[in-house]
Image 1 (cartoon, one colour):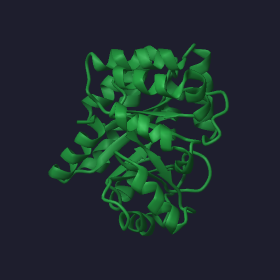
Image 2: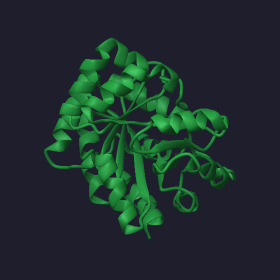
Image 3: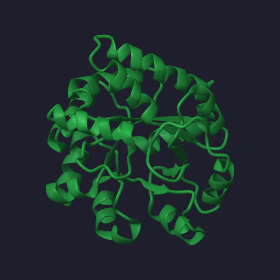
Length: 265
Protein backbone atom coordinates (compact mmCIF):
# COMPACT_ATOMS: atom_id res chain seq x y z
CA UNK A 1 0.00 0.00 0.00
CA UNK A 2 1.12 3.57 -0.67
CA UNK A 3 2.80 4.99 2.45
CA UNK A 4 0.59 8.13 2.50
CA UNK A 5 -2.62 6.10 2.40
CA UNK A 6 -1.26 3.68 4.99
CA UNK A 7 -0.20 6.49 7.34
CA UNK A 8 -3.53 8.30 7.25
CA UNK A 9 -5.40 5.02 7.77
CA UNK A 10 -3.26 4.37 10.85
CA UNK A 11 -3.87 7.90 12.16
CA UNK A 12 -7.62 7.43 11.77
CA UNK A 13 -7.51 4.12 13.64
CA UNK A 14 -5.58 5.80 16.46
CA UNK A 15 -7.80 8.89 16.54
CA UNK A 16 -4.75 11.06 15.85
CA UNK A 17 -4.19 14.12 13.68
CA UNK A 18 -1.46 14.15 11.06
CA UNK A 19 1.48 16.51 10.81
CA UNK A 20 2.99 17.40 7.42
CA UNK A 21 6.31 19.23 7.11
CA UNK A 22 7.49 21.16 4.07
CA UNK A 23 11.17 21.92 3.47
CA UNK A 24 13.08 23.00 0.40
CA UNK A 25 15.25 20.14 -0.85
CA UNK A 26 18.93 21.08 -0.86
CA UNK A 27 18.53 23.92 1.62
CA UNK A 28 21.25 24.40 2.76
CA UNK A 29 22.42 21.15 1.14
CA UNK A 30 21.06 17.72 0.35
CA UNK A 31 22.82 15.96 3.21
CA UNK A 32 21.06 18.33 5.61
CA UNK A 33 17.77 17.48 3.88
CA UNK A 34 18.46 13.77 4.45
CA UNK A 35 19.36 14.32 8.10
CA UNK A 36 16.29 16.48 8.71
CA UNK A 37 14.03 13.85 7.12
CA UNK A 38 15.36 11.17 9.45
CA UNK A 39 15.09 13.45 12.48
CA UNK A 40 11.51 14.43 11.57
CA UNK A 41 10.55 10.78 11.27
CA UNK A 42 11.89 10.21 14.76
CA UNK A 43 9.68 12.88 16.36
CA UNK A 44 6.39 11.85 14.77
CA UNK A 45 6.13 13.82 11.52
CA UNK A 46 3.66 11.92 9.32
CA UNK A 47 4.43 13.23 5.83
CA UNK A 48 7.47 15.05 4.44
CA UNK A 49 6.96 17.45 1.55
CA UNK A 50 10.17 18.16 -0.34
CA UNK A 51 10.14 21.27 -2.48
CA UNK A 52 12.14 20.55 -5.64
CA UNK A 53 14.04 23.81 -6.30
CA UNK A 54 12.83 25.82 -9.28
CA UNK A 55 13.93 29.20 -10.59
CA UNK A 56 10.40 30.68 -10.73
CA UNK A 57 8.38 29.34 -7.76
CA UNK A 58 5.25 31.41 -8.39
CA UNK A 59 3.11 29.88 -5.63
CA UNK A 60 5.69 30.64 -2.96
CA UNK A 61 6.29 33.64 -0.76
CA UNK A 62 9.70 35.14 -0.05
CA UNK A 63 10.78 32.62 2.61
CA UNK A 64 10.28 29.62 0.33
CA UNK A 65 11.55 31.48 -2.74
CA UNK A 66 14.83 32.06 -0.95
CA UNK A 67 14.93 28.39 0.07
CA UNK A 68 14.55 27.40 -3.58
CA UNK A 69 17.36 29.80 -4.47
CA UNK A 70 19.60 28.31 -1.79
CA UNK A 71 18.75 24.84 -3.07
CA UNK A 72 19.72 25.76 -6.62
CA UNK A 73 22.93 27.39 -5.36
CA UNK A 74 23.85 24.19 -3.50
CA UNK A 75 23.66 22.32 -6.80
CA UNK A 76 20.32 20.59 -6.19
CA UNK A 77 18.64 19.08 -9.25
CA UNK A 78 15.64 16.73 -9.64
CA UNK A 79 18.05 13.82 -10.17
CA UNK A 80 19.90 14.65 -6.95
CA UNK A 81 16.64 14.99 -5.00
CA UNK A 82 15.68 11.50 -6.17
CA UNK A 83 19.10 10.24 -5.01
CA UNK A 84 18.44 11.84 -1.61
CA UNK A 85 15.10 10.06 -1.34
CA UNK A 86 16.84 6.77 -2.05
CA UNK A 87 19.29 7.57 0.76
CA UNK A 88 16.41 8.40 3.14
CA UNK A 89 14.73 5.11 2.24
CA UNK A 90 17.74 3.18 3.51
CA UNK A 91 16.78 4.28 7.03
CA UNK A 92 13.20 5.52 7.00
CA UNK A 93 9.74 4.82 5.61
CA UNK A 94 8.36 8.31 6.25
CA UNK A 95 5.83 9.17 3.49
CA UNK A 96 7.35 11.63 1.01
CA UNK A 97 5.60 14.05 -1.36
CA UNK A 98 7.39 16.15 -3.95
CA UNK A 99 6.17 19.74 -4.17
CA UNK A 100 7.15 20.53 -7.75
CA UNK A 101 6.45 22.81 -10.69
CA UNK A 102 5.25 21.61 -14.09
CA UNK A 103 8.26 22.91 -16.01
CA UNK A 104 10.61 20.55 -14.16
CA UNK A 105 8.42 17.54 -14.97
CA UNK A 106 8.02 18.60 -18.59
CA UNK A 107 11.75 19.02 -19.07
CA UNK A 108 12.59 15.72 -17.35
CA UNK A 109 9.81 13.79 -19.10
CA UNK A 110 6.56 13.04 -17.29
CA UNK A 111 6.62 9.26 -17.57
CA UNK A 112 10.34 9.01 -16.83
CA UNK A 113 10.11 11.22 -13.76
CA UNK A 114 7.06 9.45 -12.34
CA UNK A 115 8.64 6.04 -12.86
CA UNK A 116 11.94 7.07 -11.30
CA UNK A 117 10.21 8.83 -8.41
CA UNK A 118 8.25 5.69 -7.57
CA UNK A 119 11.41 3.56 -7.76
CA UNK A 120 13.27 5.99 -5.49
CA UNK A 121 10.57 5.79 -2.83
CA UNK A 122 8.47 8.91 -3.43
CA UNK A 123 4.80 8.44 -2.47
CA UNK A 124 3.03 11.38 -4.14
CA UNK A 125 3.39 14.51 -6.22
CA UNK A 126 1.88 17.96 -5.76
CA UNK A 127 2.34 19.79 -9.06
CA UNK A 128 1.61 23.39 -8.16
CA UNK A 129 0.75 24.72 -11.60
CA UNK A 130 -0.93 21.71 -13.24
CA UNK A 131 -4.73 22.04 -13.01
CA UNK A 132 -6.85 18.87 -12.74
CA UNK A 133 -8.67 19.78 -15.95
CA UNK A 134 -5.40 19.20 -17.85
CA UNK A 135 -4.14 16.22 -15.87
CA UNK A 136 -5.83 13.13 -17.31
CA UNK A 137 -2.66 11.56 -18.74
CA UNK A 138 -0.65 12.57 -15.69
CA UNK A 139 -3.19 10.99 -13.34
CA UNK A 140 -3.17 7.74 -15.33
CA UNK A 141 0.63 7.55 -15.15
CA UNK A 142 0.54 8.29 -11.42
CA UNK A 143 -2.05 5.57 -10.75
CA UNK A 144 0.00 3.04 -12.72
CA UNK A 145 3.08 3.91 -10.65
CA UNK A 146 1.17 3.69 -7.35
CA UNK A 147 1.74 7.37 -6.50
CA UNK A 148 -0.79 9.72 -4.89
CA UNK A 149 -2.04 12.72 -6.84
CA UNK A 150 -2.20 15.62 -4.37
CA UNK A 151 -4.33 18.62 -5.34
CA UNK A 152 -4.91 22.02 -3.76
CA UNK A 153 -8.24 23.56 -2.81
CA UNK A 154 -8.29 27.30 -2.05
CA UNK A 155 -10.75 29.54 -0.15
CA UNK A 156 -11.87 30.94 -3.51
CA UNK A 157 -12.49 27.55 -5.16
CA UNK A 158 -16.16 27.33 -6.31
CA UNK A 159 -18.31 24.44 -5.05
CA UNK A 160 -18.47 22.64 -8.39
CA UNK A 161 -14.69 22.79 -8.78
CA UNK A 162 -14.13 21.50 -5.24
CA UNK A 163 -16.19 18.47 -6.24
CA UNK A 164 -14.13 17.99 -9.42
CA UNK A 165 -10.78 18.33 -7.62
CA UNK A 166 -11.45 15.99 -4.73
CA UNK A 167 -12.83 13.24 -6.97
CA UNK A 168 -9.54 13.19 -8.89
CA UNK A 169 -7.20 13.44 -5.91
CA UNK A 170 -5.69 10.56 -3.94
CA UNK A 171 -3.89 10.41 -0.61
CA UNK A 172 -5.14 13.65 0.91
CA UNK A 173 -6.55 17.04 -0.02
CA UNK A 174 -4.33 20.04 0.65
CA UNK A 175 -6.53 22.95 1.69
CA UNK A 176 -4.74 26.27 1.26
CA UNK A 177 -6.31 28.28 4.06
CA UNK A 178 -5.31 31.70 2.70
CA UNK A 179 -5.35 33.42 -0.65
CA UNK A 180 -1.98 34.26 -2.16
CA UNK A 181 1.44 32.68 -1.73
CA UNK A 182 3.04 30.67 1.06
CA UNK A 183 4.23 32.50 4.16
CA UNK A 184 4.04 32.87 7.93
CA UNK A 185 1.03 34.68 9.40
CA UNK A 186 0.27 36.27 12.76
CA UNK A 187 -3.13 34.54 12.92
CA UNK A 188 -4.91 31.71 11.15
CA UNK A 189 -7.93 32.16 8.89
CA UNK A 190 -11.30 32.20 10.66
CA UNK A 191 -13.00 30.30 7.80
CA UNK A 192 -11.08 27.02 8.11
CA UNK A 193 -13.92 25.15 9.83
CA UNK A 194 -16.45 26.33 7.27
CA UNK A 195 -14.24 25.43 4.30
CA UNK A 196 -13.17 22.02 5.58
CA UNK A 197 -16.86 21.19 6.06
CA UNK A 198 -17.54 22.19 2.43
CA UNK A 199 -14.71 19.96 1.21
CA UNK A 200 -15.77 17.09 3.51
CA UNK A 201 -19.22 17.12 1.87
CA UNK A 202 -17.58 15.84 -1.33
CA UNK A 203 -14.90 13.41 -0.12
CA UNK A 204 -13.73 11.05 2.58
CA UNK A 205 -10.06 11.79 1.84
CA UNK A 206 -8.12 13.34 4.72
CA UNK A 207 -7.96 17.15 4.59
CA UNK A 208 -4.60 18.71 5.40
CA UNK A 209 -4.67 22.46 6.08
CA UNK A 210 -1.68 24.68 5.41
CA UNK A 211 -0.40 28.17 4.47
CA UNK A 212 0.37 30.46 7.38
CA UNK A 213 0.65 28.14 10.41
CA UNK A 214 3.64 29.43 12.35
CA UNK A 215 3.51 28.35 16.01
CA UNK A 216 2.14 25.62 18.32
CA UNK A 217 -0.98 27.59 19.27
CA UNK A 218 -1.98 28.03 15.61
CA UNK A 219 -1.18 24.39 14.89
CA UNK A 220 -3.43 23.22 17.74
CA UNK A 221 -6.27 25.51 16.65
CA UNK A 222 -6.19 24.41 13.01
CA UNK A 223 -5.97 20.72 13.93
CA UNK A 224 -9.43 20.98 15.49
CA UNK A 225 -10.97 21.27 12.01
CA UNK A 226 -8.57 19.16 9.91
CA UNK A 227 -7.23 15.62 9.68
CA UNK A 228 -3.72 17.06 9.32
CA UNK A 229 -1.88 20.35 9.28
CA UNK A 230 0.94 21.46 7.01
CA UNK A 231 3.74 23.72 8.19
CA UNK A 232 6.30 25.01 5.73
CA UNK A 233 7.49 28.62 5.83
CA UNK A 234 7.96 28.71 9.61
CA UNK A 235 10.24 25.65 9.41
CA UNK A 236 12.04 26.93 6.30
CA UNK A 237 12.66 30.17 8.21
CA UNK A 238 14.31 28.16 11.01
CA UNK A 239 16.50 26.41 8.44
CA UNK A 240 17.50 29.81 7.00
CA UNK A 241 18.41 31.07 10.48
CA UNK A 242 20.48 28.03 11.45
CA UNK A 243 21.66 26.81 8.04
CA UNK A 244 25.31 27.57 8.64
CA UNK A 245 25.31 26.26 12.23
CA UNK A 246 26.55 22.80 13.15
CA UNK A 247 23.45 22.42 15.35
CA UNK A 248 21.07 22.98 12.39
CA UNK A 249 19.34 19.60 12.61
CA UNK A 250 18.70 19.49 16.39
CA UNK A 251 17.60 23.15 16.49
CA UNK A 252 15.13 22.81 13.62
CA UNK A 253 13.94 19.46 14.95
CA UNK A 254 13.24 20.96 18.37
CA UNK A 255 11.08 23.65 16.76
CA UNK A 256 9.19 21.08 14.69
CA UNK A 257 8.67 18.88 17.76
CA UNK A 258 6.91 21.77 19.53
CA UNK A 259 4.44 21.87 16.63
CA UNK A 260 4.01 18.10 16.45
CA UNK A 261 3.34 17.92 20.19
CA UNK A 262 0.70 20.67 19.91
CA UNK A 263 -1.17 18.63 17.31
CA UNK A 264 -0.70 15.15 18.77
CA UNK A 265 -1.28 15.79 22.49
